[in-house]
Amino acid sequence: GIQVEQSPPDLILQEGANSTLRCNFSDSVNNLQWFHQNPWGQLINLFYIPSGTKQNGRLSATTVATERYSLLYISSSQTTDSGVYFCAVLNTGANSKLTFGKGITLSVRP
Amino acid sequence: EAQVTQNPRYLITVTGKKLTVTCSQNMNHEYMSWYRQDPGLGLRQIYYSMNVEVTDKGDVPEGYKVSRKEKRNFPLILESPSPNQTSLYFCASSLIKLTGELFFGEGSRLTVL
Image 1 (tube, each protein chain N blue to C red):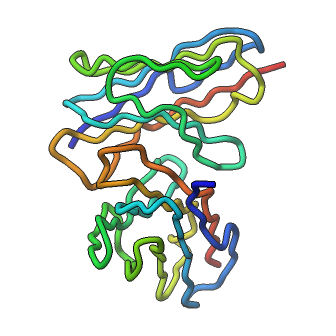
Image 2 (image 1 turned 90 degrees about the vertical axis):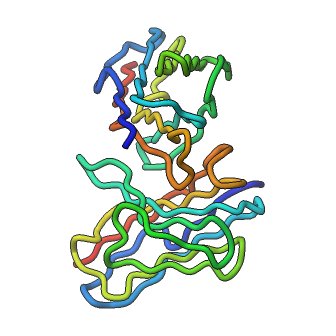
């Protein structure tokens, strides 16, 4: 099956810093999403982005499907950005489930 | 408000006592799915449903049952829970198959003693 690798596995930032989170995948996809799991365990949709670039406030994402990667940018980080960030993909030709990466644990310190 | 609602959010039970985790969505989505999340193992799919009366096994279906009698509801049934089913469970839904965005419920934290 498709492999999803996220990097770095852990990230510690000082409040106000910027960061880039990466998601690499091993095959073509027709669905890619970024999620944030907050400290209470809730999975929050950040972006549905199978290709192209989107922005939402301090967050933006870019997927280059032909090169099999996606990037999530966090600017001016805040302590509330802490948590785990997951990338999930749907392999082209599949339709039953998203395959999740292992996640990136982000800690933003005040 | 568009949402996926799970109940209960927290539950402690004992081995062998049947339980049901309910899941309901108000977005008229065709696709629904259950995942469990465990430390070191990530998110794994238990069952999914493409539409009413259509269900299929995911990666880890053993010990679980589901039903999809109505479009909005997709309950997860543990007939005889065991301690290895202690986990964080998520229900999710999407409009049609997975061609669009997948939305998750808030999660149900289950402990089986």
